[in-house]
View 1: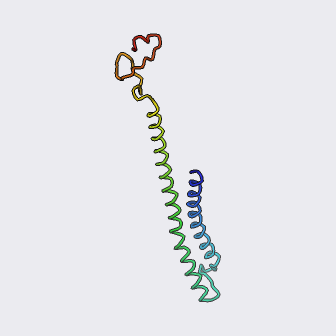
View 2 (view 1 turned 135 degrees about the vertical axis):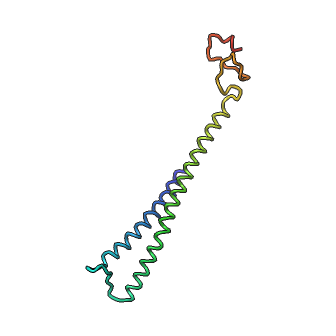
Length: 129
């Protein structure tokens, strides 16, 4: 189970960081293409169209990639929390089933609330029977 946890968390983190890195890379390229007037400078019109379309597509693709990474991490954390709750419940049930069902709580012998009465004081054991 440990390696499955590590794999899924690493995939989620890689998607999240990859989407964010893709956006930073595109914005950085746009930043360094800008001139003093704030406009992007290209040597040819076809180059401007192709690069703008490609960068727009990459920016569009980066959003679902980041959302998918966050969704994987969120759902996996919910799964781990639920799995932990079930482990605690299972261990409690295992402990209860291993104990004597007739004497699962300590009560004074004089109350007589269980079939098998337990006497906490050893010296007056005759009172417990």
